[in-house]
Length: 168
Image 1 (cartoon, rainbow, N blue to C red):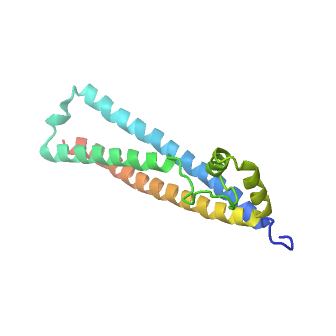
Image 2 (spheres, one colour; image 1 turned 90 degrees about the vertical axis):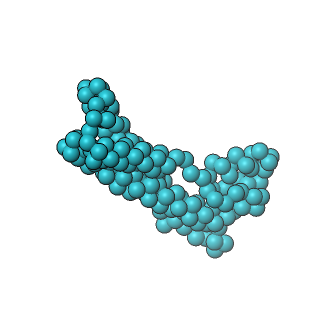
C-alpha cells in the first residue's frame, strides 16, 4: 500500500483473481454434473421405452424406489441449476463507493456518474478489492454448497434407479 492506503494490496488482488478462477471452476463442475445427470435421465427414458412403459409393472417396492430415484434426480437438477445461476453482490452501488463488479458499473452509468465512480474506485482501490473479495467468496461458497447438495442427491438417485429394477 502507498502512504495514503488507497492502492489495493497485492495479496488482495491475487486472492480476488483466485476467487474468480474458483467461480469458473465451480461452474464447470456443475456443468459436468448436469451432463452426467442428463445421461442418467436418458438411460431411464431409454429403459422405459424398451420396456414399453412397463415401469408401472414393477412391484410396489420397485415403484417406490423408481419414484424416489426420479425425485432425487429432479432435486439434483434444481441444485445444479442453482449452482450455475448467476449471482450478484448483495451491496448496491451508491455514489461515493468504489465499483466492484459489472452491476456497479451499470448502475453508475445509468445515473450518469461513471466518471465519478471510476475516480472513487481509483482513489479507494483497497476498499474496492476488500468488498469484491467479500462478495466473491460468498458467491463461491454458495456455488460449492449447491454442488455438494446436487452431487449427494444425484448419487442417491443414481443408486436408487438400478435398485428399483433389481427389486422389480
